[in-house]
Length: 401
Image (cartoon, one colour):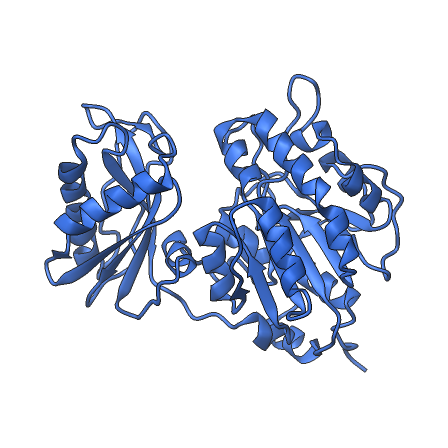
């Protein structure tokens, strides 16, 4: 990818507008009918658009590497995910509006279900309701206020997710307690290098106390912590790309990621229609929009192929509304693939479609994984998506003499 120092020199401010529509976990794998979720979906508007644009497939981090949502999105935003390794805890905390200081160690939490032997049998506690989440967070916060000299702040997220801040001196990043699969016990926070001793004690004691408080809960009877980290410095999109960017996302982590790179996070309702309505309402105020669709990823992780297809079809129905706004550049892609067949993220390239009046149309007929790899952009690093968007919006000067 082009160095930040160079893209910063080349970027110019213009009135052109870019829309980046990220359908989370869009890519899939063929099922028994031989089709991926995207191939099985009825998407006349996307199919029509692919005939008018140029396509390809993106690699979020590197070949064969399965990315988390954080690095996958950073790549699309034009940042090197290997340089800026940002933990899930920071993203979730920023996403729910928390301000982080250098004393804060943030973690993303899952309420989960464990059996009597301490084995995790559901990492998401049946995706409890938001209301249940709030009740349990309030219960925990009442019982756990401080551990040693470290303040403990517990904030609800959506469904089974919550955020925890450990606020104190001498805290360092430490390993997850989430085993990442059912049938295993939760991990302990372990000291892997000097300076982590206090963090390990605090995290392990929090888990122990939480298990005691939640022992009679039918589903959310334990906690799993991920991305236990501190907030790193990162340049903003306005600084690097001369953009005035805005984000439309319903889930805290993606709102947090947007805030981290300097986007204005817009208020919207919870439905897909609400998100597209918010885009229209604010279209004249910003020159870059990141619009995030979450449920494709959620249903992919659940192995729910049918519902993932339905969400793709619902998104397709709103494409004409975006085109009515006449963005100078429209990109439609996924951050990573989440095949329902695998029930999780995967390393497969992501379908990518770019539409502007300056593209060389490549003649594809269908927006799908198999078709996009044949497109004019080929298979390329997701970090190159931002220069492509800027170029097609005429936001880059010539490089060199």
